[in-house]
Image (cartoon, rainbow, N blue to C red; front, side, top):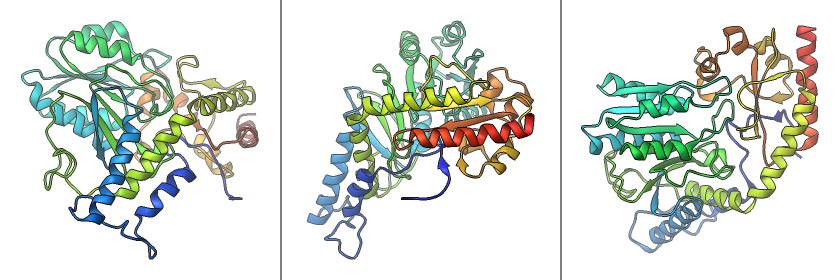
Length: 375
């Protein structure tokens, strides 16, 4: 049995599923390989075998998507989101407005703010104390000048689920495209069937790192960000890794097969955790939320000290992508939390491979350490 800290950082990344690892092994090209190391873009027999593995994986991922689109492999969700936002805009001119939410992941938020410097108008919609978008502001912001509406399905810091179906409808009524960042929701939460583009990544569903995908509805025009051989449907140049694709596909298939069991298990873990953290505040809506994400606050808590003292638990103070930036969480700030409240918040993420015993032990370790701090 593996030893080490209890892992409660599922929003940063998830443990690799044994089934995904097994699916990758034939394509890693080890000493006993019979050609799994071949380039999937080569025309010879070994290349065609590798290409077939890629297409099997593509089909496994596409099976979880809306009908009427195609899956484009990328290096991860950040590239997928950049391809969607920057790649779609040229065909949408002269529309120049981009509408998104103040609590979006940096891969969307920072890309949009960069585009603002290139002449686009960017609207960051406000959220309420629960982290849910202001729908009146959304309806006012999505005008006939809007090219794209980009919204995260499940927030990576607070787990709140946005009303993506309604937002997609608002976008389409104005003639705009709708992009959904489904990284934290793919395989767990219903996807918006009316979306024009959906970005996902493997390592948030127990697949390998370094592989993601952008689902694009038929008829949506994109321009590539990366130029070269045009290997991935002319939109993403570079040699694909059959091993990473196979791992992603296996993880997606497993997510579909285990969806009900995983959902029940995660809800059980969440309920037990809330019993132990009964006197802590939950940041964001507790109702409209993915249960595997708990963002908790205890006034007066020094989170840096807490994390140092509770080394038996791997948890975080927020997004792993911004953990080294020194900036306060823009998500918690958008909820209206004060700086002290933001600094006294932690994020716990758990899922398929977390046990009740682990949740209980980890929660008690954190609560005991917090009690020593705050009395």
